[in-house]
Image (cartoon, rainbow, N blue to C red; front, side, top):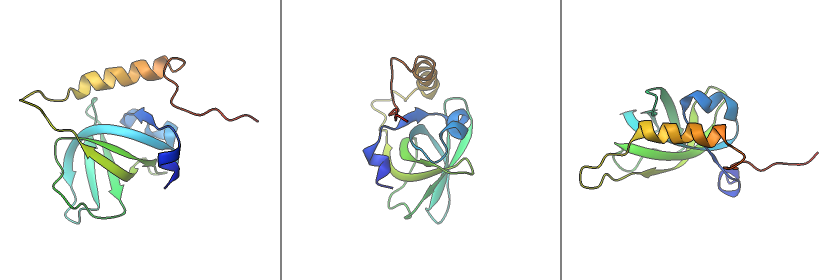
Amino acid sequence: MSAIYEAPRARINTSMLSQYVSRPVCFVGRVEKVHPSGKSFTMCDGEGKVVSVELNEPLDEELSGVVEVVGMVTNKGALMGSAYTIFQEEKGVAFDLELYNEALKVIHDFSQYYPFKVETSG
């Protein structure tokens, strides 16, 4: 899992998961449901699509609201989370997931201006 921290991570939403299998990614979404074991949870992205996040260790804190997960995309289209960050809402200003999703589309449509991948030669 150390490769997750050594390489650039693409920011993606649920519809982009299949393009990033076995690659490190960054995913932002709203926590929908946490499994009682604390070893997995589901998140909803800015398009309302749901992704499952699996963890190696159970959560040691309550998880809710908007969360950023860094991890690898599995063959099943889930995220194997290595780290997460809870986004704190300040003074009633909620994180706008729909606007974030629009930004993701711009980043991916104009990837020449937002290079998040390392090109390897032959």
